[in-house]
Structures are given as C-alpha cells and as structure tokens.
Length: 403
Ligand SMILES: [Zn+2]
Image 1 (spheres, rainbow, N blue to C red):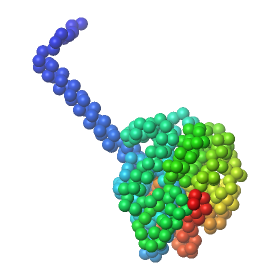
Image 2 (image 1 turned 45 degrees about the horizontal axis):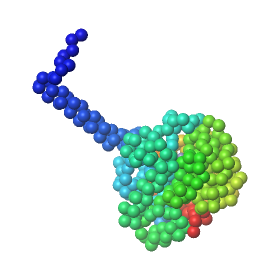
Image 3 (image 1 turned 120 degrees about the horizontal axis):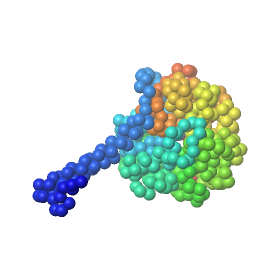
Image 4 (image 1 turned 120 degrees about the vertical axis):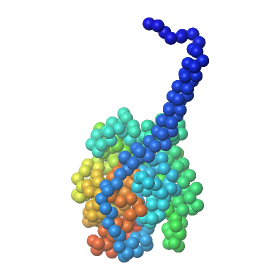
C-alpha cells in the first residue's frame, strides 16, 4: 500500500489540513454550544407537558374570590430545570411571573436528586439515574455531578439566589415568623410570593444523618423519605422491595420533628407510610398525589391513609396531572379534593400540583383560578375554598416550622 507523503506534506496540503482541522474544531464547538444551549429546553419541553385541552374561562366572581385567597401549593420540581425562576418561560408549568398571575402566596419548591431511567410507578432499582445526564447537559457545577447531597444544596442555592435578585417579590420561608410576615404583607396588598424548600427523597443524606442538619441549614423545611426507588432510609412505593423505614429512617423522622421540618409521605411504600403514621407526633402531609377512590393508581392514598393523615392534623395535597387524578381536568381535581373532605374532613384538603415534575397538566400555575371556579360551582363556601386552596397548609406550616 502506497502511503502519500509520510514526510513533510507540501504547502497546499498543509493549508488544507489546517483548514480541515479548524473546520472540525468549529463544528464540534458549534455542536457543543447547540447541545448545551438547546438540549435542556428540548428535554424539558418533552417532559413537562400540557394536555392541549382548552382551559375553561374563569368568570368574574371566581376570579374575584381567587384574588382574595392565600393559595399554597405543596410541590413543584421547577428547581430541577435550567431556567431562571424570575423570567416568564415559554416552557414548563411555573416561574415567579406565572405564580404571581395565579395569585399563589406560597410555593413549595422540591429538590429531586435522583430519578431512575424508565421511571415507572410499579418497580424501579437505584442502579440508573437520569439526573446525572441533566447535571452535565445543564452545565451544573461539577460538585453536583456525583453527589446527591450537593445536587440538593445546589437547588437550595438556586432558590436563594432567585429570592435575592427578586427585589422582595420572592421571599424564603423558613420560620413561623417568615410565614407570618408573608401573610401580613399579602394582606396589605403587597406583591410577595413565599418559597419553601423541600426534599423529594432522603437519598441525598447519602446514608449520613448529619446531612439532615446540613440540608435544614440550607433551608429545607419539608421532606419525603423516598422518590422512585428504595433508599437508605425507607422503601418506596415504586421500589423493588417496598420495605418500611430503616433505623436511619426512624432517626430521620425524629430529627425532622425536632428541627421543624414537615414530614411528607408522598412516594413512600405502604409499609413505610404505616410506620411514619405510627411514629409521628407532628402533622404529616402527603405533598402531591391523588386518592384511590377517584383514581386507582398505586401511589394514591387509600381511605384509611387519608383518615390517618387527618388524625395527625396534616393535609393531603391533590395534584393536577393525569396520573394523580386520572384526567387532567378541574372536575377530576375537585372530585379528589371532595373525597379527601368526605373521608378526612374539610381541614385535610390541600393542593400539591407536581408542576414541572415530568408531568402532563391541563393548565399552568397562572391559570389556577380554574380550581377555585370549580369549587364554587360545586357549592363550597368561600371559607371552605380558602381552607382548601391554602389555609389548611398554612395551618400545618405554622404548627411545624421552627419559631
Ligand atoms: Zn413526586
């Protein structure tokens, strides 16, 4: 085989080689910029969807009542995505401008630190993780590439940074005093939205109870024990073994109650939910989900679980996405809310959207008045609607948060 000039190439050939190499570098750089600039948006658009069904018009009376409410949403995964909370986005389900349009007084922002590939409601191992790829694609700091604790601390920083840049429009809620100040400001007609940081699964403890204090210090005031897989603290409803709490889990529960963090049973296995409700001495919440009576999906609560959450003085946050209520309509959401009221009492009903949680919803947070309108249409009193839309959750927070 003849090899063309293994010695010094001729001048035109050298020029050609240089040009080709330069061309390749430019191509790689352009492709990388394209990937890092576009991929996060494309991925998010594919994950956080809208049904495309028309959103009901909201009449003047319902809008009037909605504007007077203190609305609280117990769960959103917006911090996972590469967006500025202060900018109104053209993707996903929420950001500060849309929370303001929807008159949301307090939003709970959750930290998702790990999510298995092919995530499903029935059975997932902890062997794979989608969030790792997201940390690269979104150019997150290297400390978040491998550490689940660092991922949650990064989410906490992101929320704190948005609050700092917001000119007082977004305020962190970490104590009962913060909560009281938020309510007072809103009752004075100020444009102020509260933000409470929460954890979706305690896999971010990385097996070390001391990390709970680290996360509390970073602002975490609510936590679920598991996400989609069994972890060091508890079995998940969507795990393989679906076991109860571990010793570390029982320790975490006691420590959360001591610190002033709300205990959340969302995603926990049936055995773990039983155990949490046996051991809890403070109000317990189900931050986001549905009820089996109106939508028979394994993650949704049985009547017995609703009764037991109610007995702790806690609340059940109803989500708006198809898998929680089986049909992403205001009617289906209010059906689930009414079932919670029937079984657990009016003081147990609450909201937990799961916006931006890889969910498909019928309306985003700017259009939340559709729920108020549906509750009115069913004949609920303004007092009861105020309790459901946020009053009940404010009561729980006022009871659990540190002073
Ligand atoms: Zn969730």
